[in-house]
Image 1 (tube, one colour):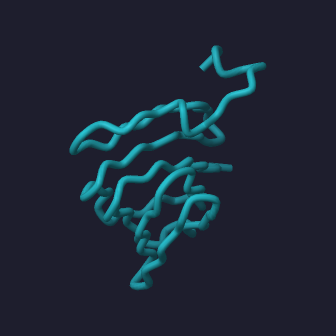
Image 2: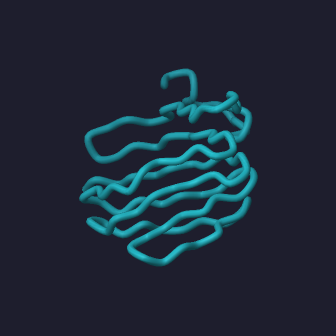
Length: 106
């Protein structure tokens, strides 16, 4: 994480796609929250789950299908969505995409 400090970085270049995989790279990890980059190959996803904190997803490349509760959203590059604390959600890639996940714990 130290190498990220005091540098100008292109987020979408910090994580690469891998065939049939989800790749993640932690940028910041603290008691108060995390910032993580993800690259999802097509047909990959995160199963439904909940977290006790709000989470912000910013799509950097491609398009994601994000379900919060029973409502589905298509979130495209340059767009973001907030997933409320304690609300079931899941993330799916019909096509590959990259996202930045910001989770604030306190």
